[in-house]
Image (cartoon, rainbow, N blue to C red; front, side, top):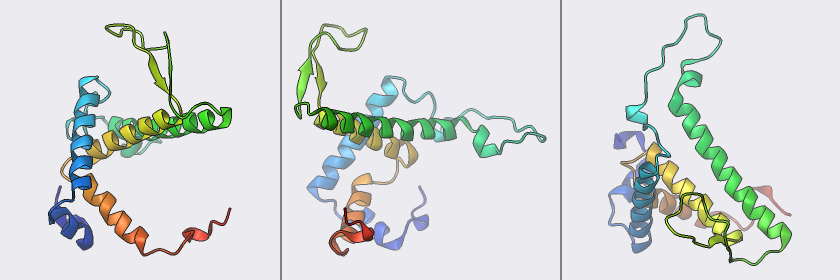
Length: 165
């Protein structure tokens, strides 16, 4: 990715020596996206996407006909799904972590109890977020983006954004 399109404060963080947390997040982001591609969750990437012909009389824009656009929208919806599942675990009052026997995915090499609970659903949301971040910007250190956002968050007042609930 062309660094001049990135805000200067993030460019500085991107070039700086990463913290251990940033290195760990960078490693997880790369590992998760590689795993996701190996499981065929990404039939094509942004730079490999199939060309779509735009009908001049079509009511749809080129972006709306772009298969990568819909793939990203699907990935964002799956992040919502994981957080909704976390809310449901919390609403039901289930343990933070538990296993369910015999509920694993079809095609597992051997019977394995399925991890469940609000913490598992939050982990699924994080996994999906890191996978999408790597697909969208493989040359940008997502750990630097998190550090950049946290540096901003540290300057914000308590309960910022007008939320008082």
